[in-house]
Image 1 (cartoon, rainbow, N blue to C red):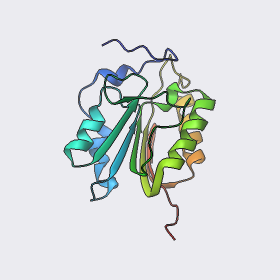
Image 2 (cartoon, one colour):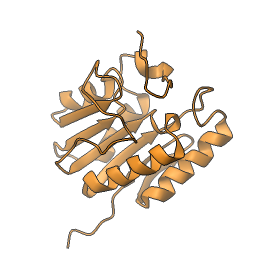
Image 3 (cartoon, one colour):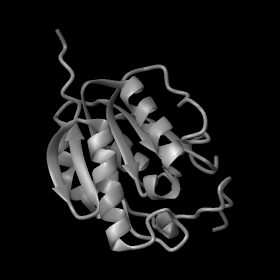
Image 4 (cartoon, rainbow, N blue to C red):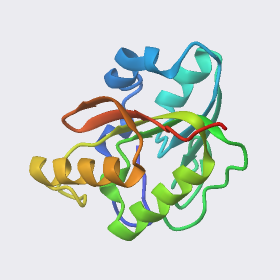
Length: 168
């Protein structure tokens, strides 16, 4: 598979066909309802397909439109008008610059419904902004702190958090 990204970054995990193990193991944290999911950096759509099979409505966004809708993540506003119940951000943030991450986090907050749940997964990659495990851990904390959401699960390179925004 050939995927040329606008910033010349490439996730080697994009070629995998099955959903991420973290998503499969932690699906229960997304509640029992059939929510509206935004899959940011969807790659080949493996996580999007997993969520669709479970009855969710999914909008898939990636810098390459081989699955889902093309969107320059972190450089333009997310083309989403409906509030998201679930946001998947698997293996994306380490490929965005600090400025792009700030923009994307701002957009995540804009599209998030109260009680929205987000899943973020990261890994160190030599062609990313988190080249080492230590870089990745710093980035993870930066993202989690910038969101300011309630921690549900938090482990090395991944977390699940809930928007604690009041519905009153």
